[in-house]
Length: 229
Image (cartoon, rainbow, N blue to C red; front, side, top):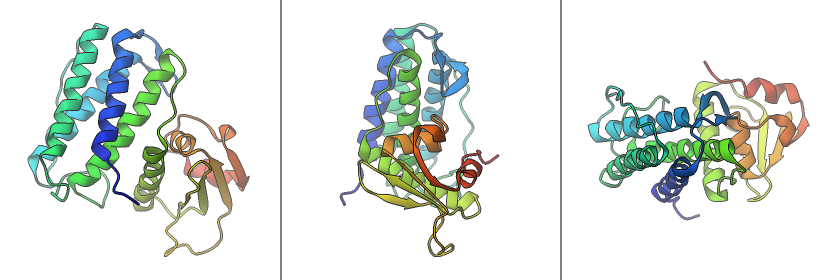
C-alpha cells in the first residue's frame, strides 16, 4: 500500500473548511460540537494548527506555549486567518523530517510524522463539522478515513483497556480490531460495520451507534465510545 500523503489531506480538508467560513453563517450552531457556533469552531481549529506548527518547529519533545490569538470576526477575514494557520502548519511539516522528535499527548509515536498523521483527522472531522453547520457535509475521503480508524485504534490501545470490538469499513473492506491481537486474542464480542467515513465520525462522537450496523454486545461499544477523561 502506498505511503499516505498526510500533507495533501491536511491541505485539502483545511481549504474546504476555510471555504465554508467565507460564505457561511458564522453564528450557525455546530451539531457535532453543540456548545460552539461556526466561528468558535474556526477559532479552535486555527489555534490548534498554529499550536502544532509551533510544536513541530521546536524540533524536540518539548511542549511550547499555546498561542493566545483572537481571530477576526467577519467571514472572509476569518477564512484568510484560517488559511494562514493551515499554511503555518503545512510549512512546518514540509520543512521538518517526519522522524524528528516532538511533544505529543499520546505515548508513542512521539515524532513529527505522527503529528502530521493526527492533523489529517483534526482537519477532516472539523471540516465535516463546519459543513454540517451550514448544510449537508461531504463524507471523509476513504483513504483518509481508513487511516483515521487505524490511528484512532492505535492511540486507544495506549490509553484504554483492551476492548473486544471489530470495526469493519464496508467500502474499503478493511477490518480494524480495537484490541491488540497480541494482548487480547479472543473473539470480538461486537462488530461495527459502516463506511470508513461513518466509522471515523462514530469514533469521534459525530454520529451515534444507531447510524451504523452493530452486531453483538452493544454495551461494549457504548462503553468504548465514552471519551477518555
